[in-house]
Image 1 (cartoon, rainbow, N blue to C red):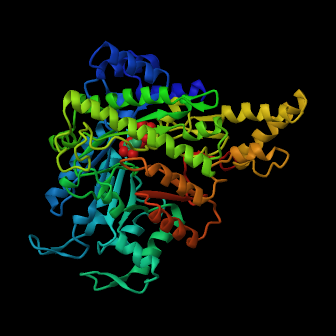
Image 2: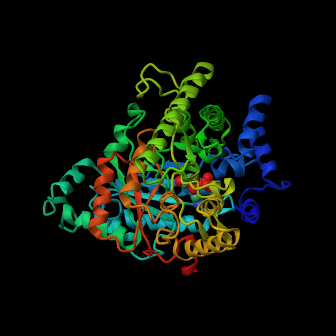
Image 3: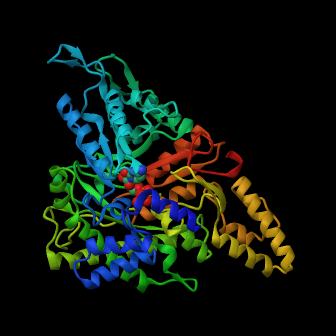
Length: 559
Ligand code: CDP
């Protein structure tokens, strides 16, 4: 990552008054969270070395008066006007502090239902979602970015078709991602081909909505512009860590954190590429950083200034934290493992299992020192006392991976050379450093002279910049092309299998986009959803190339 990109992000988002660089930020955050000299030193050095970064609100607000440190919130939305507008107000307060909010709108009565107090008719969840969207529009997060929202409707809500179509035109309800919460019953009917079966009867329009109509609506929406996302209610609840507190029907904006109403969660990510030394994973170093990160995130719960009392109460009851990985594809490149190979997936699964296990062990140690989370009795942890009901999550790491200069979350690299337009509208030319160095080594290794290496290197970089792939450069050795695949070279099945490999060892969920080529059919999209359900994924987003006009990352030819 070029210094200018990092500088521009630091200035736009993270530097507080009097701070000049990243070092100052690490110091402020470490001092705000560490309880003693040792902790402060460890937190500081983990962040400064880019081995571990907490989510943006922690970097922005730790040690400041605002003091709100979490990225993820879910709120309760009831059916009365006062409950709905309470949620609008809570959401605004959360956005103001840099957090993102998720809402399940299914309690809201369907469009056209009688409203007794006024003798009128209800306008339904989608109309209210537009109110939340408008409120977000005017509130910037901590003055630094616009708030993100997740709007969810259960597949069994009568307004489901209207909801699915609510983002039909690009730019509609722009401050929301929307997701349909499907259940096993619905997926089983789809799988059995029961498309003509009536799924819901709309009480007000009298319409019988079939399984096929809902399924087609979802598929068409995804094919058209990547919305809605899909969440799997039963899988989320089979893995609910605190069933004693009720079931979960809501996630945060990017879907990686299913939460009970009013819970919040702080995320943090270990940069896996920093733990590869001499072509092997340094498990000792990874263990040490994982333990420090768990303590760091648990300390956030203590020090956090929660925006409303309900959130403080719910968050302190379960003390969920979301430690995950970023720089995963970079680590695979360093190990010369293909992202879309069984070996690549096995490595990821084992590594995440290790991080998950160490996280639980550290949380267990914390419980011995400071006590288990208050709702521990009746949780899935049985007799094994832990301080945090859930410890692991895979975040998108949209901004922090830029700061760390690594590939984001568990996503494959989008292109090894591209033009980046950042959130403050500057453009930067980016070349992946590992791609460049390995390319050079590979070309020299096959006997090219230094001047040939130089020419061919430029040719390959230009090609990947233009087209996003090197798979058609047959003069490059197959062994190089097999490793240096991009998000679009990787078939959808491998995207799904990678997500599933991680999900098996993550307590919460995973932010992941299943990239598909422009030529993907609606049948392909249906197959992705069915495979994801079978693979026990909790939720996903699918994006078909070219199906939206505006995306942050683009190849140069689309600039
Ligand atoms: O990299 P960074 O810590 O900035 O965030 P991320 O990993 O891309 O996103 C993590 C979570 O932060 C999202 O799922 C949202 O809950 C929240 N977020 C937000 O509220 N507003 C944004 N503009 C981006 C993220």
